[in-house]
Image (cartoon, rainbow, N blue to C red; front, side, top):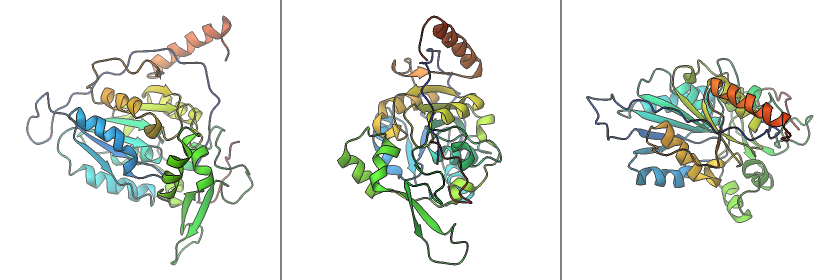
Length: 322
């Protein structure tokens, strides 16, 4: 998938976003009633990756749905999620990790109950963009160490019997020996990493190649978490997408699977998006904020640089696969 950025100077702390009003559904909902948090996983994962975050949110009184993501293609995956969201009454905070970010971007359209979008190291495509194109925008991915290879070298393809284009009729897995580096940036112990690699769910090439439709982040408030050690999508790509979407943003010293390594930070961001956080976000999180806030932070960063502060991509095309 993707590309990792060079680290930039720490962002200036800026105030987090306002909360959206929590009413509607069938009849009036009380101010105390919590929105439903819907968690959408990405590639090479499943809904169990949200377990710790689910437990934290449920302890705070939030209804939680950690839904399955089919990983068969952006159009079908988004339609599946949209259908499930329609069965939830009342306000919704919609959270997507990785490719799950592209899915929520499409599935949220037309659903007035969705009050906020939360991207956890997630894709935020604009209309017509693909996951492949976004992930190749800036360098840094460790998914391939050979840009000329017909398939990224960290992936293995398992053929799916049946008619159609053989390049599309495959399931793509992260090789077990690459999983800890690419997905986790070596932040979890080998035993845990091996167990996650063994239970990973594969992705079809259409998850990378299908163009996105009108993005919900243009009309729904959004939050974004940038994982600065992301070796899958890449921090620089995440920064670009979050800035373009005007998302309220934090940066965390964490790998692509930040929801596994830093569940408290992810929970804090979801609470902020739900309007239920009475405290500032975790001090270790550097907020980059909305576009206006980002410009202010950039100016301060330049001043810091002047005063002495320090400041392998694969972008090749794999036909319709990744």
